[in-house]
Length: 249
Image 1 (cartoon, one colour):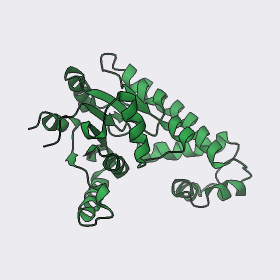
Image 2 (cartoon, one colour):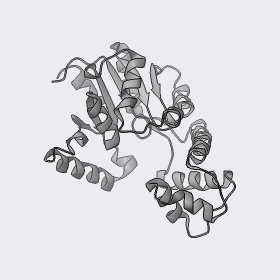
Image 3 (tube, rainbow, N blue to C red):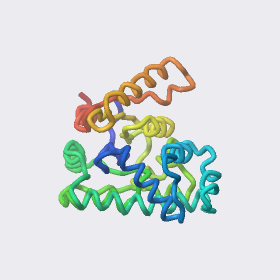
């Protein structure tokens, strides 16, 4: 049994909100649009190669230079935030994305119980709040760390400083707060900060193969002291499964 929790920090994408109908297609489209808005065009047939360079951070700026772009990493990231926000907000307004039903349920529960809510995400606050605007009666987050904070402060998950910033905003200590996310970087950040951690596994969104990969990585980490921070305190398939833990059952 965990100590009585007084706050919950959620990741956004795929944790409390469905942001895009098809993640693979979405991220490809956004990436190509960012390159175009920076003044370039990815050579036909090279899309996956350029995307891999971007997401791994290996030789990406050099690849931009081969197509005549002098855009630096920080500027590319800034433009990506703008394009991503524009596309996601449009999806949400069109009813193609938004808060998951179990997220709506748990958010209402937390409000009734007087438990504080916060969000730590690598999308923008406007994207997150658009999903909340579509559900006017759902309680709003009281603490926030978003994409723009990440760019400004040069912080990425699993850096526990992100958790510390959000905890300070909601006035709670790590030991009385939970971190809930769908990726091991969320779990690692929460564990490093001293929070109770939940990994939500959404097979209907990620596909069963990715979920099995996460489970395998967690099991391997249980027996490796150096990787043990990847192990969540709880693994769930619905956010409502947090409720019995909060009630000490």
